[in-house]
Image 1 (cartoon, rainbow, N blue to C red):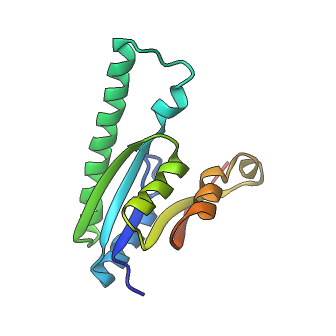
Image 2 (tube, one colour):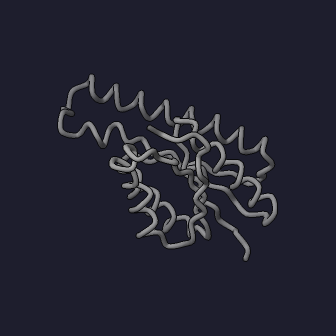
Length: 151
């Protein structure tokens, strides 16, 4: 199987680092392109309280700038892991929806995505992004399990 387009969603929790390593490795083997995707969910989650004020516009712009800076940093890391062809994508919205939409748009052959190992209490609140991406993905998914359980 050749992986020409590998989608790797990343976040700033540190969990996605192992997924980045796997995506870079597969890219190196196949010569495929890695697209790092970062979804800024803060704006989407804030919609019930957002107004059309200049303050909110400034906050939104700041969140997007932080996302772009984060993506640039992660792209450098993935390059250091050996991936040669790296794209970045910044999206605003619901993480699961944006991951699936980006997979369709980039014609992804594979999604390499981190997931948590949850404690019994954590399982009550977990799985929504994992579950929704799994059910709607247009391609196979390589779930990379985080090494530290989430309480």
